Image 1 (cartoon, rainbow, N blue to C red):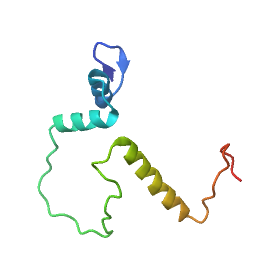
Image 2 (spheres, rainbow, N blue to C red):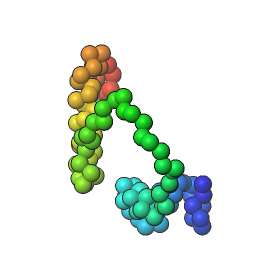
Image 3 (cartoon, one colour):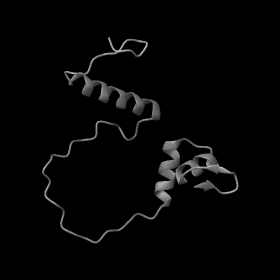
Image 4 (tube, rainbow, N blue to C red):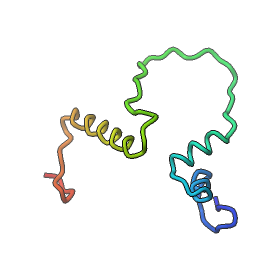
Length: 94
């Protein structure tokens, strides 16, 4: 998709980022609020077979804090995997 008048390719979120000069997260939220939500026919919800876990992230946190929360989350998950091994600083497996 070409951004109108600027000869750049991108998607709607990238357009908002470029046009308004804002971060991806801010552009996404701005774009999401402007888009009419999809409506689906009402139906009975399916029975859950897997429990829904709470989100480990703070939705009110700033970008730097969210990045740290995501990094911590995946680091903890990797520690629980027996076959996951740390890598050397150069990126080569030890």
